[in-house]
Image 1 (cartoon, one colour):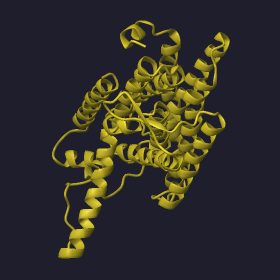
Image 2 (tube, one colour; image 1 turned 180 degrees about the horizontal axis):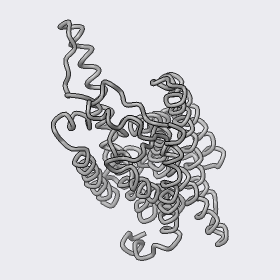
Image 3 (spheres, helix red, strand yellow; image 1 turned 90 degrees about the vertical axis):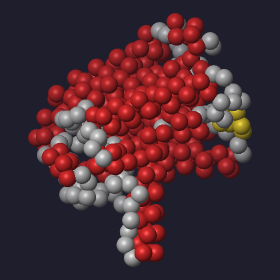
Image 4 (spheres, one colour; image 1 turned 45 degrees about the horizontal axis):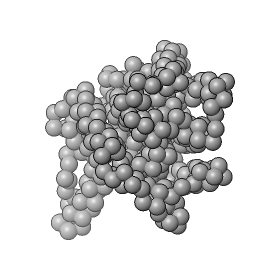
Length: 347
């Protein structure tokens, strides 16, 4: 499909999930946030973080439930409209329904983690091993579901080359598992400033929706990505600085899974290096900091740091950047790299 012609052919089915995702999330905010306050589901701020973040202590968390509900309503609306038109097929199920349900499973893991932190007052929540095992199990369930649908294809696109490379199954499956679990936790690390994870993911979702429809002809995935975009816009009404609610691990694990699943479905996993550059920068800043600190402590008797604080958004905070500036710059970087990815897909 010529993408310019495709842009002219965008129908209500493409816009419906965006509108519903936004509307439901926006309407839920004024009802859900006071309810979280009433339940005293306030976020505990880590003492090792920036000192000025302590004023955010008590801000309601688990707000991810708002956009998870909005996105779910958007997906359901699109499925109903498609069913009426007789357009629901295995590609729609694989590209829209399945990713939502799997992402919902990851959101449930995050909900349990948030619940333990907030209600049970155990600040670390689930252990790292518990979270990894649950995430890996869900990733395996996704692969099994795709296989049962007869849609397990092991090819992936190479950036700036229109051809795909087919991987052997024994290599492809561990690769997909790595991508899913890795991206989920990378997005989780990105959720550290008001509106940051939601803004970056909104840009990525817009790109995924357009690429799915205009480049790859995947109506189902385009609907799912548009629903996420709508949910993010609605959530940012309450999550932008100063945030009235945080998404919590409930929301960030859901979003991480959604981003990973969209890339896997489109076979553009490697493009995530560009599309999700901010996610990976956040992750690698932590890895670099931790590794260097341990190395220097062992060698010199005291730990040294590469960054003032990690994840890297805190480094820029310590350098004097405001939260608004960091969110704006990180979103612009994501938009620019999405544009580069678009060029790479259309060379």
